[in-house]
Amino acid sequence: MAIKIYVDQGHNPENPNAGAEGNGLREQDITYRVGEELAALLRTNPNYEVRLSRPTPTTSLGTSNTTSLRARVNDANSWGADYFISIHTNASDSPNAGGTEAFAYSRPSRAFSLGEAILASLSAATGLRNRGMQVRPSLYVLRKTAMPAILLELGFITNPEEAALMSGNPQLFARGIYNGIIEELGDG
Image (cartoon, rainbow, N blue to C red; front, side):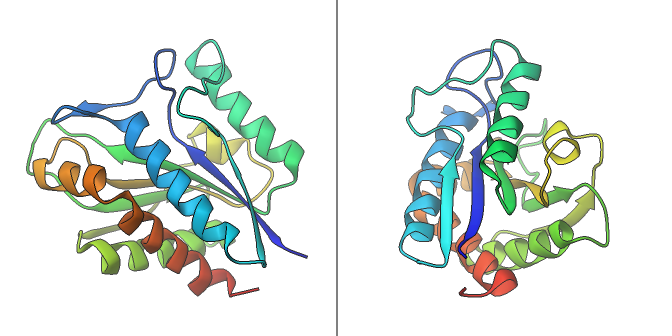
């Protein structure tokens, strides 16, 4: 049986639920491209199945923030995903804030372990600082999913260097995430 990974490209192309902006870039565009690259990598491995929350750049989910999040979670739950990975970019008032981090519903958990593996691989692939895993049970996509779920912050869109790296090399981020998945879940 293939392991089913639901890749949620955080945010919609436009409001409702549009993402952060920084350095002339939009979070929803970066997360879309990284998700596409990650899905392509997963599809080359017969031991994995993948579904994207936004199969096209114009896919918009829900009519509010809440219904957008609910649509993503309901799609993953009804598909019977084994794991849920929600991809985001971070933002800060300080352009010097940087690094990659992730959140899970609880610790210890399969999600927390998967997040640790993904962060280690993502940091190794990109050179970004690993800010670590945190528990955040209040996040809707972690609370309402029926499978282990993580919310991953690739880097800071408000940091000029990180924004340029995320925008210019989405496949590097996808490869880091993919390597973490393989590290934690195996090649089949």
